[in-house]
Length: 141
Picture 1 (spheres, rainbow, N blue to C red):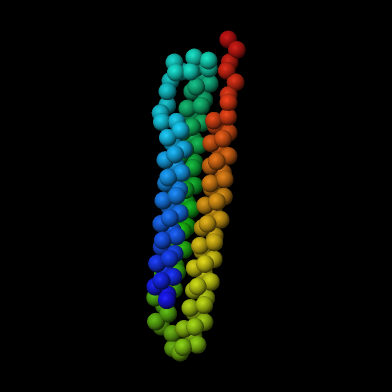
Picture 2 (spheres, rainbow, N blue to C red):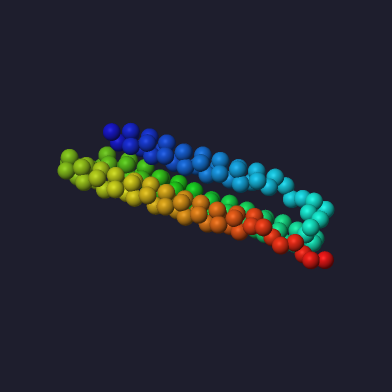
């Protein structure tokens, strides 16, 4: 029963990582490269340069934040696995039951926290991408 719960949590974690990777691939695919000012004659070279800089900063920040969420998820998973191995140290069935219930609560709380963090990060990323791709006003030369 406990192995089934760990397998389920592993599948959920794998699914969330796959979803995030697919989302980033789609976002990066929206703008496959950094064209120069010649590709946007309606914008000044300075505006194109500012966009390129903002693009690089935003992408870097999003990847750093994604790494932090992943590291937190990995740390919580490792702690839960360590706690699962300590169940063998229990002296009586009541202690096993109490520790198992505590572990289940921790596992589901960790899963909830990671899911909430991923949702928050997705919202932040979406807001940043919409702000970046909002129609800019061409310069009036």
